[in-house]
Length: 462
Image (tube, rainbow, N blue to C red; front, side):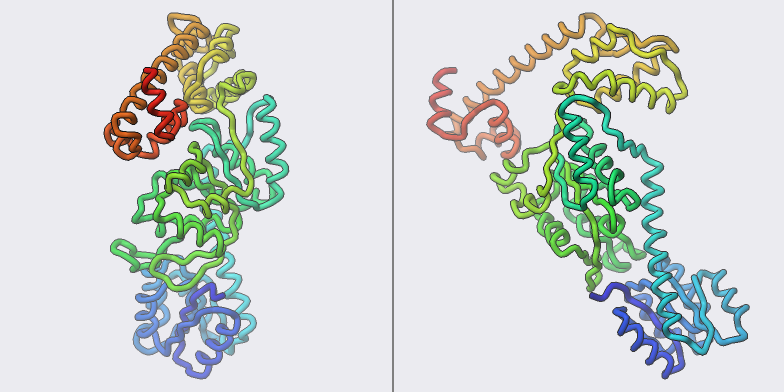
């Protein structure tokens, strides 16, 4: 499988043809040009990974070609061929952008070794950039909690971390699915490799391929240079596809093909680029139901669902709340350069009894606010912001009653519309002003059967 395209420019016919044959035998795509003018033309019309050029050529010189390459192919490595005794000129070329030089007469094995080393270093530089970007973010990989469900997840991490099998993480929004994904990545065989996170809901249909797989310069308007996509950036490590349930349906086939082939093709390019990555996907949706209504491909689901983990909502692991609150208070004290004396017993009680619809993300926001307003004292219930007038248990009870009443009204209204539309789901969704998938999800939540006979019987009881 051809992996790299090499631009070779040298006006010595015998040397150029022999070197091109050697490089071809090493598995490279070679574009051999007899002068700098043709090399520049090839540089403008091809995606080039590395350039090998003589300095003294008719027309466009090697030094001029290097200058053009800095603009047209800034990521391409450059090796200069120079005559013995012209080392000063070669050094000058390196100041202009070349990466290495080699003197004539050429030893082909040495040149091939230097070329492969240059391409390997280029890959490392790109991956290090990804890693530096990760370090600048909050890459917390610690799974906080001692509840049975969290202990089970920690045990699963130990087992998964020594493999590169694909993982599907399920759970409500804000439960910490990305934290779990990072914990898997950084605790095992991929710990020194890139972790690249992609928000699938933010991918526009028209940009999916260029964002995931990259593009070649000139592939479309505005593509002024070659661009590496998410798959290549994650090569050797983990590609985290967050909210995979929102991935555009018509683009799911190209994602499936890339996962199956373990290779991608940049937009505007012609060759496959092999990638070795582990996919971790996360969703707050039930993908099986999305498959039933043709919103998600079943074959893609099977590829992703090799190992399945579920992060429980915070309300189901209330024993972890004090530990999480302490974790976030330590974090925000440091970030905000502020101080507090911990949490009072009534604050801990209020935290334990809060419904936490936003899960861990909501808890983090509440603690951050409390740190700001506590004024170097113990955080009390009133500092939390959600328990100003009533006890937390009373507030929780009121919330639960309101939720039950709202659900009862929704159920009655949906049943009424379904009956009016003769159980036509599409017409009912339009009448309700929601999407078809949202209607199915609501029917599932509210215990409304899909069968027309049952809907009619339930409607009679309203």
